[in-house]
Image 1 (cartoon, helix red, strand yellow):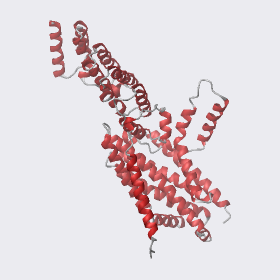
Image 2 (cartoon, helix red, strand yellow):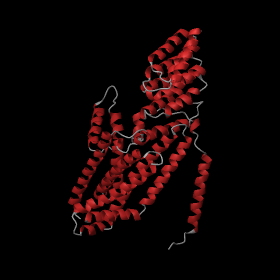
Image 3 (spheres, one colour):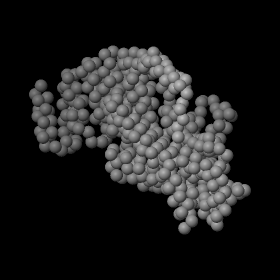
Image 4 (cartoon, one colour):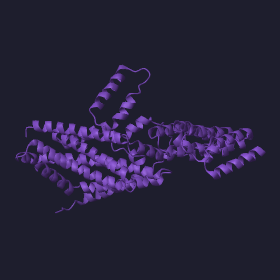
Length: 253
Length: 219
């Protein structure tokens, strides 16, 4: 199956590159930071350790995948490797989906390693739920990074756009809450800004609802809320994939 | 194959590294303790800065607050910080732990009272989870501030507001404070009411409280 072969190639490239070492370094840095901070905490030392470690691992997983996808894709484009691949008897859809599956596989591997590390602090169920959610979230970031790497001409722009989309999505609930509490005398500019943020939020994924640290520190989510969070990520993954396919088919390579 | 690096570059690298270390050494470590506590941001602003990682942000902010010198702390500003951190992560216990165990134990009664009132105010928002800190506040009011009326107010709040299971000593606190205040009649009525309510099921506790009631009736 050509798409599976492409996915395997992407996974092999990641394994032979720096990704496994960077993942281990992130893990070591997270555990060290958490251990240090828990030494200065007067109470809730374990909760502090867990909250800091989970937040760091989540951020590292997202950044590593975004960097891996954009660097790998843009190198292939600049080395004319993409043109060579497109000359093979493979449809563009197969090519794009195979590549995306490989990057998503990298994300799943990262989520597996990071959530396994959390088993030292939490029972299996919260770690599994957090890890599965992280896998979905990182797959979504991989899809965004692939879309921007195919669309934008250089590495900084592609990583910047991916990071911008992700961070804006994470910050949007807080932005909306701030914008939703106007001063007594609201101006038309304030009203416009509030509705503009509301409109932007419609086209952003609810990454803030997924991979929540509170699932590890307090209690596991209700099944309905958990399913809704994952479904939201899956829906946005499909949207990004469709947008990427649309752009890739229009591309005159 | 590696090539030899010109000597002047090696010297420049070593010298600039030494200069950097010397510069930082001359500046010394930052003394956060000597600085004034800045005004607290809003919970939403902190949530935004932490990109939604409320649990980590709340606990890291507590470590930040801990770094300030207790004697020089601006308590009204500190109270605002603690309110913000509790709003950011309402299930976190760290802010109330610090309020009860560190900040309320300040030798200045005015500062101590400010923290005790903060604990009471925050207890009312989530009595079932936050009662242990109000129980500690009642003990501080009784033994440190010698303000039995305040201690009784906190003890009464625990008895009336908490719906979750709490140890007997916490529910009885008001009765013992009433005894200390010399309000024996009120203490008798409350203890009798507690026994009649059927909430006490442990035989040993029941026997202890009945004995206590008999002692009160003899006084």
